[in-house]
Image (cartoon, rainbow, N blue to C red; front, side, top):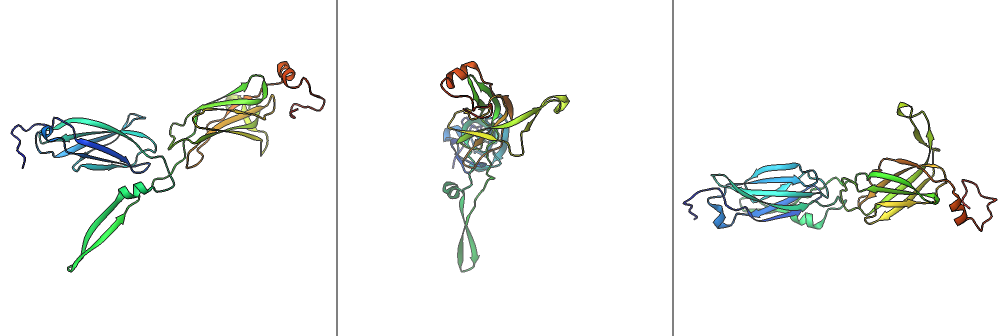
Length: 283
């Protein structure tokens, strides 16, 4: 039995705070009592606050009577801060903070999650004895592909009328590790006076317009798309991919490829017969 002659709020935080990501939306937090010389009285409860480090918003705050809690409804592949303090009958003591990142979205239930969510219940079914009932719980999250890349920019490639350079920024909500990006450029036509306020409106050139694609892996945030037609308008957009699949496309940005220049002709066609070439047919 412990005796406290000077009952005060704890002078130290809970000890050994640990976090484990269970799924893309759940994190398990567990801890021990404050060290004996920090308790200053019987520990009655704990306060746990969870903050999304991306937005700075508190997403979960509660009084906990045990030494563990499972926090749900989190965002996939996002880092959270877990701030914990202990309380005696006098009040709360100082807190401590640890961080954990949720798992990326996955179509498969991990073995680790199954082990962590495994629970055993002992139910006495008859007067002659007890029956052991095991239950395994799986917290399946709704697997989600990444959001669209942001801030796409399309530029002409100086001296190359057959190419456009596309750059972008990472998705705000990746929901997992980005494995690669797909950059697309689709041939479009500009219709003057058809847009909002009489401005320009870009439309596909046909029901099945030509679309050119470039795939980049790793952390690259730009791509050069080649094989285009000189002095032609293209709408270019980008998508991100995780293990779940391809996410939504970014907004389209329109750019006209460069026209033939004297430098390009001198560089590429000086020794070629140009009689069979057209603007739509590469020599």
